[in-house]
Image (cartoon, rainbow, N blue to C red):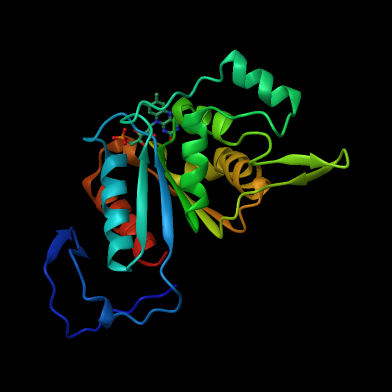
Length: 233
Ligand SMILES: Cc1cc2nc3c(=O)[nH]c(=O)nc-3n(C[C@H](O)[C@H](O)[C@H](O)COP(=O)(O)O)c2cc1C
């Protein structure tokens, strides 16, 4: 989706270095290519003073400016249980499609069912997502919801999500993560296995890297990119 901002329009906003992030823009001035989406955002970082939190803020500002609606699932804030307990393990491993899932898992699945798109915002920790988010997948991608077998082999999902975006911040540069193969392994696991592998129709990953140097220019460039990804979603 591409949104065009008329040159003559003056808007209030805040400057991120050379990048300008508008606070709000009248939607009538955008040329919308598609109908606005409802997006479920899963956020996994313990701190609201973190760079990753700033990424969430500018990304959602972009979504607002593009007239999308969204709901944020803040895994730390809501204290989401991310350990698979014995009861759920027994349910998952018995492949019993009729067995109840825990209520908190059901609430997550219902929120996903109301969304057109999914977005994950998190920091790269040890070359993957934080354990809090990994545990969300362990529990929410339950048997009978994210996958189930029919006739002994076929893999079917109930997830009806048009597209997903994985937005992760990283200490290393993107170049380093690509050269070492770590970026590719993150894409394989997050995109191919956890998203496309359960029926999400399209999935992309954006790594906002180079944060370990605490370089202000890098921070601002990454934030501008996060805003743009929200606005062009
Ligand atoms: C426990 C931990 C593990 C980390 N592992 C990695 C890593 O494997 N690769 C990487 O590029 N950055 C790694 N980082 C750096 C974070 O990704 C980076 O600090 C973060 O994306 C941006 O900072 P924030 O915590 O202020 O959001 C790690 C940071 C922490 C705290």
